[in-house]
Image (cartoon, rainbow, N blue to C red; front, side, top):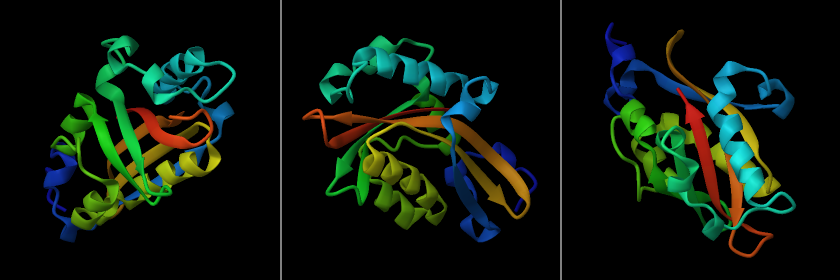
Length: 174
């Protein structure tokens, strides 16, 4: 790893430098007072307010109505097939800045083909798809024993029919 890799967007770090990532699914209670999860908790609160008794429908979520504070931290993913892949419909500017490019329109599996260190993110998205419930996470990118980036966030299920997860709303802070 070059000395300045911690300053580079993730898309510019050489994969032969040992770039890897890991996702930790975090218990809801552990996020309640933790400052790293402030953006995630605010987004989850808005998600719950949309439909307090059921999974919100995708058409009930307007990212612009979540406000300028949350918008840069948001992603929306469409579920492809039976949850084996996902496509970014929205990739917030904060994520674009950290990653180094806009992933809107790209599938997670296509990104993994370009950058194998992105595979753990798919694990988090698949957990939301299977559970149909929010998943809090901590995603860490490392090279050797050096942490390059760490994000704390949440992935929230959205539905077209009220029962099956068809999209995922996510928010994270780096």
